[in-house]
Amino acid sequence: MSFEPSPRMRTPLARLPIRLRLATAVAGVAFATLSVVAVAVGVLTAHRLRADFQENVSTQAENVAGTFHQDYFSGRWQGYVTALGAVARVYTDDGQLENQYPAPPARIPNLGPLSRASNDLNGYGVATVSVPHSPFLLQYGVPDAQLVNEVGKLELFLAVGVIGGTLRMRPSASWTRRFLIQPSAGMLPCVDGRSRPQEERSSRSR
Image 1 (cartoon, rainbow, N blue to C red):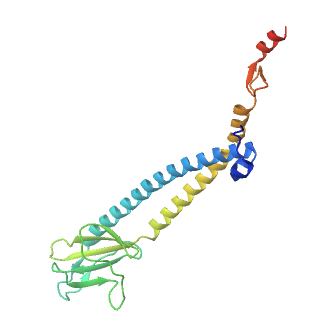
Image 2 (image 1 turned 180 degrees about the vertical axis):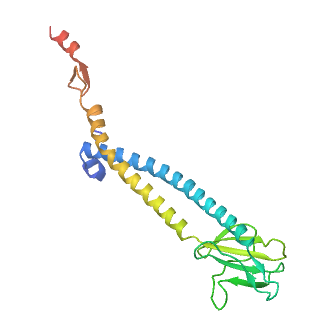
Image 3 (image 1 turned 90 degrees about the horizontal axis):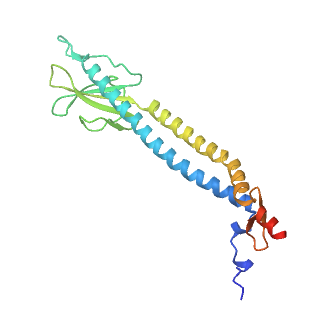
């Protein structure tokens, strides 16, 4: 009774040459390993970039709040917004809008509710701090376009690294095939498919 599989039951991969199957297997393992590493590095690095950005926004908000003050005679708010494209709103302690920068009629995006925790909303990193020596709060927003650009470059770099690393593993598959499949030096194939040392064959021939 023969237990050899029927040719109809063979998978498409089994019909491929052994060299191609081995190269595909090695490349697949390399791709999976590099992908896991790239995802881990990408997540950790992107988290670090976002944390640094939010910390920078909070620092800028503290500095800007120190420059905001009301003119004694006119009652108008004055201050200096340092970051390019940044926006700011001044609120009373009960949440009433007192002033904004850029000044009306300019419209600025919604920066969300007042919160002491830094957050990212509508394309802005947002921080809320107290205006020194006053009961007012400053809500400060900085565009996060540069952060998004840096994260995008990071993801592209990691993707190229995974693809390049996988392609570099293909020569290794050829070396593995020669090492595992071809008989080693001093070994001769036997009738049953196994290899036998050349010395053993020579002794029996005597």
